Image (cartoon, rainbow, N blue to C red; front, side, top):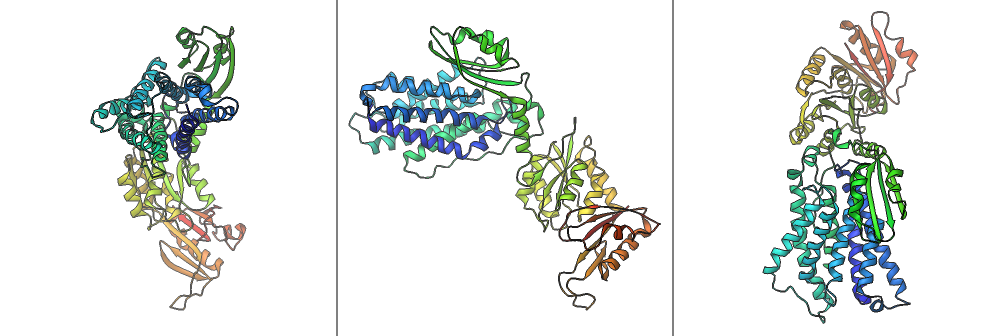
Length: 554
């Protein structure tokens, strides 16, 4: 194997790794099978990085021994071993076996350039090796994706005008042919990824495609892009898992345990049954001198003790309960969404558009997730849709809390796969009053009806700083203006305007709730003194920017 050949191979691995690094978190966020620990992208990256490091080591040693002296068999064997030792988790180990299978096919064909026929054979052997490494293969995963890639290439070879290359074929011809056949494999892979949820109910229920299968197509796309001279290769993005299916985060065992075993006369299959007595998700792969073990277990020490007669190294033990918590925390805070604590057995979640830290905490305290709408309270339809997706529960009741948001909220509700009902709350204080009626065990429609009854009897008020002079001459910029049910009723000094608003709301109310803005010009003691003895006034921090005080009367 020449320096030029290994450098070209290294460039492809580097391109695949770079593409995967770019979408690493997206791959992590798709991860629900076999455990939703959110590390598939990380594990696949580590495997490819180990391969790249080994290639660099080989190139460094070529100063002492030429690559021809080292030989294809030793190079390919060391790369396969590096992938195996660097692998972590189900996805990493399976990827290492794909690399191993492809590498073994290359070893078996000395002197041949990498052409369409060899790529097809390598894919087929990679698929066989990967299936053979898993004791209970599941369709709809990376296994199906690579098998259907190999099948597509095998069927397409008969229709390609050029499938074999002689030893003198120039590099650009090799690259063009390899790109052509790999693009066909990529097309088959993307189709297979999208079909995955039809084959694996766990994926369908969580609303995702298989993370490992998608990661494999990302790697292949990066390689094709390198072969095409950095042309853009289109590959779809996929939305993260719905966190409203906590059963997909469950596992019987706590620790994801990975380690390597080196010795003599090792039998990968001989240890499988013993490992399955200690846990599940067992992978034990390798050859008679090197094994890589992956198992989910409560007793990592007992798993390693099975190999006491051999050398155990590359130990990596992860607490999956922590991984699942970290993943859920990441997915349930997409952008500016803060998700309320899930309720056991909940059917319906609430979502409110908010501004201000105090208001956000008030809604969260009522079990309603909060989307920060900014000072203008004007999120986009897409932001609303992402927030709906993050709310636990298949039913969602949405409180827009601004007349400007109602239309966008209704559009997002129509686009969502969830059952979403918009309650047309037109102010923050009205939305907060309505949120009290949320019952997570009712349907969205039942909650919406209960909230509508609250809004029907609610009166709201607000006091703010005038942003401009009144054309009618009633107030000037900077003075206070007071509203009740969106009607301007008071203006002038802040205290006088707030007193008038409170008095108007108190006519038919026993309780007034008041939310203080960040620049409110009166001390809380003075505000509380404006209520008199006829009505109870509850005052708390809202943190809103646009209004000094927001009020509601029940």
